[in-house]
Length: 187
Image (cartoon, rainbow, N blue to C red):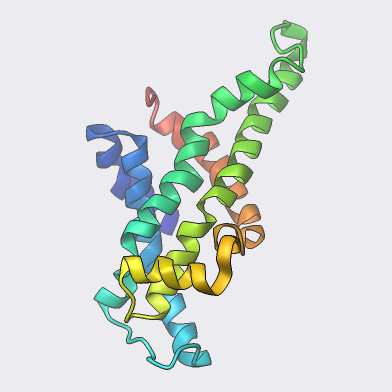
């Protein structure tokens, strides 16, 4: 239900701008959901000394990070998986022969899957930044990045990605199977 709402809300951004903008809208909407969970658990577990409040502004914190996260984690597979397939999978598999329909499908879905995994890892730093900003509402965007870098170093860019890979693999497979035909003609 949430996914259907997100896609319907983001379709005008796709229609008037492009798919990247549509996935930025999805990210902001998903960020609100994460925000509610992040604030709840931060309060319940007392993870920071300055406990955040559950407000609209609080759950919307880090929206720029959220928009960027979903532009990468969902937008890249949506837009780039065909190019990944052509560059990596098509040369290895005889997909042009009519008798190899199954290989063509394997190449197609392999492109989606590989792009999804790589995009998920590439978007993890933005995801971590959004969580930090929602959990510690005293931080600005710049202070969030500085704090995460000081606390985690380079690992801030990938720490936690393994927890999102499976979820985004499912989301991106559904985007390919359901959303792409619904958004036919999107380049």
